[in-house]
Image 1 (cartoon, rainbow, N blue to C red):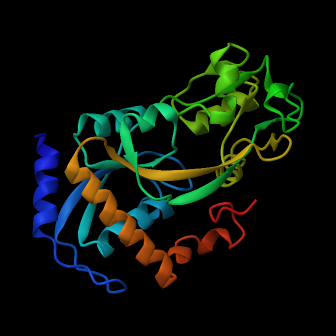
Image 2: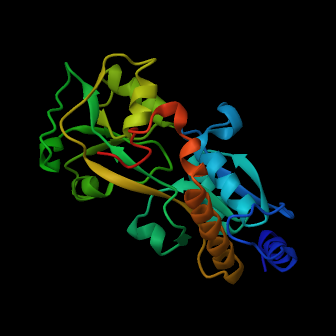
Length: 257
């Protein structure tokens, strides 16, 4: 058995009974990985950002103390699939990933939009065909937005692959890519350093974001079950919303369109 999963087995055996609505005292540490995805997660954000805080609090409700690592997204996913960490967040669901990892209940739902410049060639009509022939900026380690996957696969859309979503915002502003697809909150964060960016057309999609764990490992399945229960307790207590109060109740973190 992989070392991290041996450790996870010990966590499950040693942890106490969890009473819904009563926060449990953390007993052991479970190691998770995330990346820089401001303003949701990030090593430079207060306590790792609101999504990191939600994950930590949900695990505390389940009697577990989370140790959070910040790594590039592709490396973080590889660490989960190899079993060197217990899980990673936040990741969207794709067909390929479903064959490799298991997904928690949704941590949050975000509204994804096509972002370009007013002077550029992008005029998104709501139909993905209107993006054919353009350059789509997508950071390494990120999954292609599912609605755009057919156009990427047949070569109708060209991928530009920098290291980060923030890099995409700068490449689009400088004309080295035509568009990228962040969620609305990330778009507003990027406009602080790329003020020429605009949202083109209607929202492209609503996307759920999850904690992922290795597939085929019973201990990982138990971790998911406990995380989901802790997340549900967080929602029912009303504490979940408090993590996002700085962004306003109608923010897309709440899944509003």
